[in-house]
Image (cartoon, rainbow over all chains, first blue to last red; front, side, top):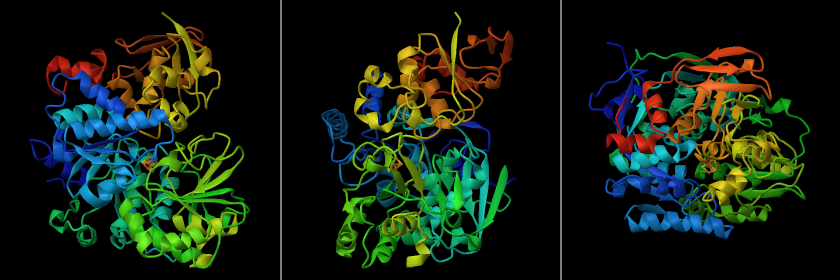
Length: 420
Length: 164
Ligand code: SF4
């Protein structure tokens, strides 16, 4: 019998049949649905149009986040957040309020488990694939239906195998791996597909790094990104006191992949995405003399505690370049509290950083850190499309938190290996 | 009824269709729609006419899952979005709100061309160039959702989420 990919396995477990194959269109039951302040009001409005729309809501598995613009900068956004907050509380749903963290990070800390099927009104919902959950982003109407009926329809995607051999060299991180993969795939190279990551570099990567890879699967157009659930997954769940939710999941050895890309991590240097697309990637040695006005270390792509520790190591006893704006956003309150305890916040502040509450704001130009005309930003986030950071007259480079930290110290795009 | 084509490049992102900086207007769709595609074509929101077509290249609508992206395009009165290919979430969102998203060969369409669309026959007619662009039918489920005017009316009609 033909073996199953991770996507086929997990989707199969969520249908009545138990087994599905690529290309089939199926109705699946959903384990978690979530939304946030940027899409929630539209979604709530759509649920309202359904007869008996709220009756089906699964109280423990329906989550509303207030994370996209916190604390709220305008009355319009405050009103939107009030709609979301009141709806969640009024219907007894889970509310992750302002400051608690970016939805994808909180999902990975507290909810997503191997084998789950998760839907959110946000394209980076695929982040939880790093925990081997089939997680995908949809729009407000799709999620309104999924919340109300606890199911959705989807087409079982083709799987594309990304094989990363070798080992991560010093100064090269998960972010560099996914940027390299994007340079090979392009922004539509995996449209409608499941990106399945394999190889020794993935086996050796802890879940904190795996989440960075799956987060950016959507930057190649993918429906989801998936990584096996193994002992490292178990360790991660243990860190968050939910080891009992672990189960081992590997794809079958004779699973069928539509195509495959392969590269060797050992040969990589830090990678940088140049404006205006996350697939416009070059190794750092080819990015010379790019002066930077603002550095943003944040977003759901990274700024988990491991990233923050690396950033702290780079900043040790150093300051940001004069005149450069440096903004750091831990991805969740849990991460923030750890940073406070470990002295990382103090070190960052002494380096000249503004440390903001956990949230999205700076990442998508909603509040804080809006660049001036002509500014060049170096960001650890996932997108550098025109206008993404709030000003279409600014340009954005992407790289790892480590590369961002080294860049902040020097004032121009810099190799973090200099400081590690 | 025939109308003009507004031609855009490949890889138009949701950030260009409805930028994040206007997130505060998301509960006010008519206001938000006044900024539709302004980062890609400044004059678009003020000059687009009811019945016009938005024509993209490859990977139209890449990026975020914001349903506001197809919603503002629809609110501008656009009849359909045509592209060589769509980003997955944008495509699903467009159909879910009843905005036709048609995958066809848009290299045969230039800025300002006058077009006609027959969804049931699967033909875009470029009246300016006098060519017919035939396109394959969308999946049965998506076609059924679009015919009902979107996913909410579709589910209301069937009383459940069913595959067509
Ligand atoms: S941090 Fe940025 S990419 Fe992530 S969910 Fe928030 S806005 Fe989206």
